[in-house]
Length: 269
Ligand code: NDP
Image 1 (cartoon, rainbow, N blue to C red):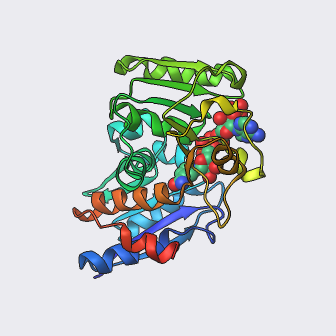
Image 2 (tube, rainbow, N blue to C red):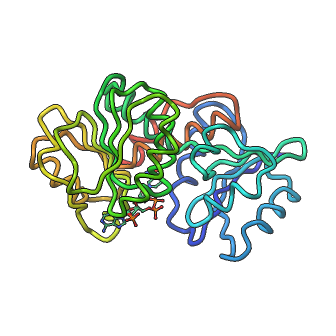
């Protein structure tokens, strides 16, 4: 029987994951199907149970279920625990194992695709929601010199900084008006781009050597990307993060890491 996977969300029609995984499967010679799965807003756990009963081998999880997904797992990998959220499920031997590949996807996009080292660099993370939390441990794993988390609600950023202080990298929290100096890497992990808004970040954070990455992606540059580029930064959107998190999930399921260049060419010719 062909191995079955899917992406669970609500809504789900917009998800690009079913375009990505078949490319990885062809490239690596793996036989599998990957579908969209719409779960009722109050029926995530029941949907997962049904997928297991139907013989699925795993699933990705997207909005709004990433936090709830951590609760249905029988075991969580370290990075899912740190993120407090799950985007990849493995169904094996009666277990539901939860992992989070969003942060590793972001780091892979910065280090491999953009060719920027994070080690010894100053990193500014805008936002303190689920995506920002998921990004922190993988960024810390690269050994940055310093991480500053800036968020509209400062208390949320402070809580994040506290949770991740134990890993030994200098990490601080601030509101947007307290950001000081320029940064090597600026990641917009707020959802402000969804509404076409610019987080009120000072232009002084950008310089000619800054990489500014917006986790959001679309056909047009976001206002954050336009602002950053107008102040000298090199910019990227979140498509690379999406493609890389999918490659990481594929590697967890199939034991082989696909080359993401084929998917980049397909999705952004
Ligand atoms: P959450 O809802 O968990 O967090 C939202 C964050 O954005 C909070 O820190 C919130 O601040 C902040 N925020 C919202 N509106 C504004 C605004 N107008 N100005 C300033 N800050 C604002 O969202 P997620 O963390 O799940 O997602 C964040 C972004 O990351 C989304 O755009 C999402 O699409 C993208 N994403 C991309 C992925 C990819 O693969 N490329 C994967 C996952 C996410 P406050 O605490 O004050 O409310």
